[in-house]
Amino acid sequence: MMGGHLADFLRAAISSIAVVLFMLTLLRPRYSPRVTWTVMMVIVAVDLLTAGYCYTHAGLTQLAKLDILLFFALCLAARPLFKGSFMQWLFSILTIQNIFGTVVVLSFLGSRWLPAPAYANAALRVLLFGLILWLLIRYARPLQRQVIDQWAAYFAVALAISLGFAYYILLSDDIVVTMGEQAVPLLLLIGTGAAAYGSIYFSMKSLQKKFDIQAENQAIRADNEFLQVSAKAMAERLRAAGETDRLNRQAAHDRRHFDNTLLELLDRGQAAEAAALLRSRVPASETEGSGGRIYCENTVVNAAVAHYARLAESAGITPRFRLEIPEELAVDSLELAMVAANLLENAIRGGQEARADGRAGVLTFTCCQAGRLMLEMTNPCADGVDLDEQGLPSTNREGHGLGTKGVIAFVRKYDGELLYQIQDGLFRVRLLV
Image 1: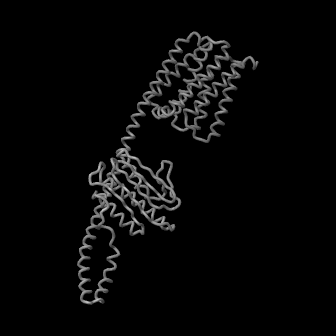
Image 2 (image 1 turned 45 degrees about the horizontal axis):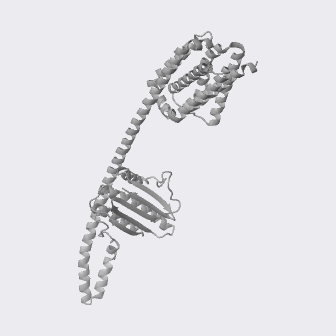
Image 3 (image 1 turned 180 degrees about the vertical axis):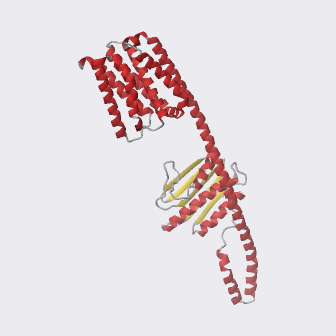
């Protein structure tokens, strides 16, 4: 008797396995693959046992009717395995049921025109299930997972198609005769379902483009807001740097008077008084730096660079700067100053960590404009400094990483290029805008 129902068992196995694959494709498992697949195999076993009983005792018509109830019962039992709300889950289950009904009808009608219809039916099921599964994985799955987030807008479509298939099955006295006599209405139902799901797919694709544009606009607004906040902070730094320069100029003015007084004492032979005067000036001389040095023509950038050059020297790091930055730039000078400040601040911190490891602290900074603005900065870095998967500096320290975000926002705004490298104990950043 098993040999007489071999084709039937083959179709049942194909359908059961296909349903499981569709569930794993359209739904999001909650537990490990081992648990999920164990339950799925139990579902396949129960479905095949039920099919075997109906093939040998009840017939195809009873199996078709029982499959509707058994399908939802088994899926409901497996509901805790998957994430999402109940209605989202139900939309996906109805979609799987509609795919199942479509393949059953098409494989039955198509096999009537082929030799060995029973086995041709099984072959057509493999082809149709495989084609739909491939389409779902390749094109529709990401969008379908958005559809289940918007189930209220599309649930009626899935339910109406599912009720259409159920109507013909539950009211049938002989499922084989029904599918032959009702071939045209069933094909119209399948065509309507395909058109409906196609409309859902293209509407979701359009919505996805809209969401992507909105997300991109939000990212741009966020970058601009970040740049504005950073620019304000940079302005405060520049004001502080300007005050320091003013004090340095005042100190230089006072130093001229000091030098004249010192020369006068030496001319008079009052060496002891001159030495005492020099000792009184030692603390002040220790605070003097390169505040008055001009690094580039751009006033704003120069103020920021001069400020961090003094910080580098105070930290025992030698700054070697070669900057050819004009006053007029294609980018905002304050934003460029902010980028330079962020990079210099990180470089000084990296140089200090490298000095703690016994490495020489030299910070090189080169920037020039030749059509586009090119910037390169190199500093020694300590062991353990690394880049993440996106090629950006990685850090787990709280409060760090904001400077890098500011640099990235600047590069995005001007559609530039940014490259970080770590090689031979040197940390290098290149920027082109």
